[in-house]
Amino acid sequence: MEARKADRKSTTTDVAKLLKKLVKENVNGIILDLRRNGGGSLEEAINLTGLFIKEGPVVQVKDSNGDITVDRDTDSAVVYDGPLIVLTSRFSASASEILAGALQDYGRALIVGDIATYGKGTVQQIFDLNALARSGATNLGAVKLTLRKFYRASGSSTQLKGVVPDIILPSVNNYAEVGESRQENPLAWDTIDTAKYEPVNRVQPFLNGLRQRSEKRLATDKDYAYVREDIEQFKKAQADKSVSLNEAKRLQEKKELEAKRSARDKERRTRHEAEAKNYELTLKQIDLPGLQVPKPKTDLEADKAVKATPSPLDDPEDAADEKSPVIDVPLKEAKRILLDLISLSGNGKAIAVRK
Image 1 (cartoon, rainbow, N blue to C red):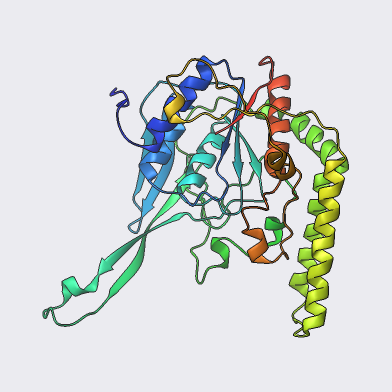
Image 2 (tube, rainbow, N blue to C red):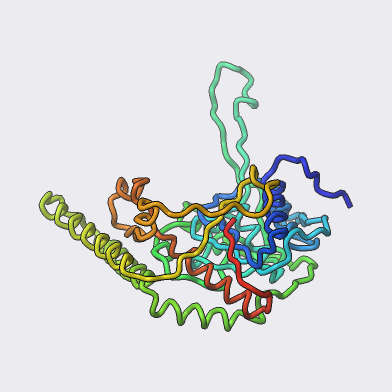
């Protein structure tokens, strides 16, 4: 088998370098964050999957004639073989769904996140109609046609249903009208025959315990209490089909939202939670010995750490303000789930790292 070229410029090559560095530093767990990842190269999705499995089918592709092609990872090398979580959201789409779905089918990674991924399981191609014109003076435009459909190694399509996490976290996104199913005339979800592959079963033996621990935490977690408040507020706004044009009323609503956000920030400042060390690892630091010493937090950074997850009803301009950073609540819980996975699977001291 041909080995991957170390000098090849690609996402897989870069991630492999980072993984090797983390392995060298004795990392015990990794979170691969695919939230808001709209996808990209199918080849990269296959090769990225190959960093975590020995070899085997990653995705099946069916064309308009019904012919099925099985795309495989053919490299038996495994760059990282330890506890792994893939964090997804409703905005994880296409190639990122193929990666998450493959790692779930193999039982190689625990999938954590929103109720499902986007559900983009089709392939489109744009055809220039001017190429068919007899006269170059006519501008006929172009047409985009759906030519192929993706299926997981298990035979299940990623179309519409996407990838359903092993552990679903409370999120406003779970109630938002997003995803392939919201598009006009989407192709249906279906299945084909399962490809021949050998699951490694790294998740199922611990799944019930992981779910129970997470549910117990979230029942009393203050940040997730805020998330549940935001969910109820979002559902109420969705049900309300009218919008007031009264300036005084709108200003009062904005004032109430700001007061709620301020109260949450104030509450977070009263907490006495253990502060984790955060190390930045970039490709430029790969050859440096060890991990770089984390920098002490400035007053500004300490203030950033207590900012709340924005409400879905917040002013978009406020949400986009770089001076108003937020607590990454799903990542916070994903780290705790990773610690549980490491503990239950007997993989030693817990060190959570986000790619």
